[in-house]
Length: 295
Image (cartoon, rainbow, N blue to C red; front, top):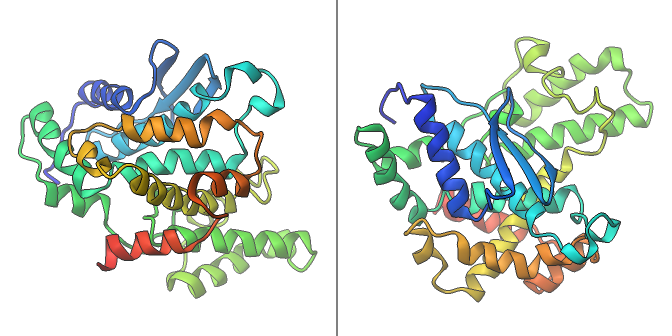
């Protein structure tokens, strides 16, 4: 990618433009700033936040589009069941699938990047090519920080945390021994050792909040997103052609019909079974990673 600066104000306006084009209704949503991107609010008042780095426009774009996926899900839950448990999202894994199907599955495709490159070039008055975007957005590297990991190595970050959680809960690992166990497990999975606890066992907020067992929802969501995208492509043969025009609305409409409108009426696997023809199957995720990174 060309060196910055990429002015924050231009980044923010572009993020909202692409978010809106993806299907988030800004008559009932806002995009604001925070230290870390998140989505909150209610179905009729969705709040997404983002952060901006003038040296890296892609981080802001992916953050905004990830949270857009969460926001679209919230906005399109069944209105007749609003404020009732059945009208809520079908769990954390389902929610992550909706953010990741936008951020990872749709907007990192060759088709969408062929649309995005000239848009970025025009907005920032410099040549940004499709190969440069692919290099930036599909770069694979072993790294210490989970939220900065690529989609190939991310599951290893989750697996480490899940194994440590199991050991902590079973009484097999004392909290005082967590830093050493983390470093040992990290090296076993990724071949590198964190230089300090900031880049090791203290990097996440989840355990401090009591959110044990949450990390696997990220990988379950990634698997489900790949499975849903494969089903959407079967149902909508022109989907990638739409992505090439920056048009995510056919995908949004398919998700509205097959995921969002059900709320939590169906279990996670039943939701996937009806949408894709089978319960959660990691093969679609494996196929996606193989095609994108090894094809």
